[in-house]
Image 1 (cartoon, rainbow, N blue to C red):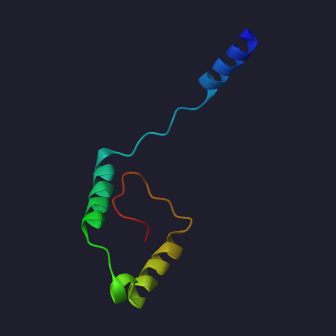
Image 2 (image 1 turned 45 degrees about the horizontal axis):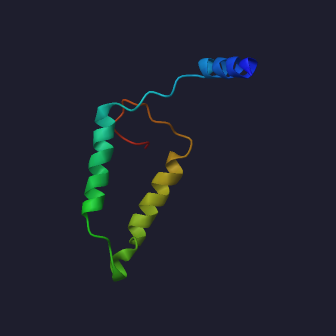
Length: 79
């Protein structure tokens, strides 16, 4: 029983530390975006979907961002 306890403690001690959280600036920006989205009334009826131009812009931005990383200190997304 003691061997299992020692082995478990060694595993915990050898595991890497958790990743560092994002700087407060990024958390604040993300929070403000979420708050503004939650405060906006949902689209209803014919306005519920994206316009074709909006959908195309989202699609191109998403496809263009695949494989790109953003440094933690950058304020803008991938271009």
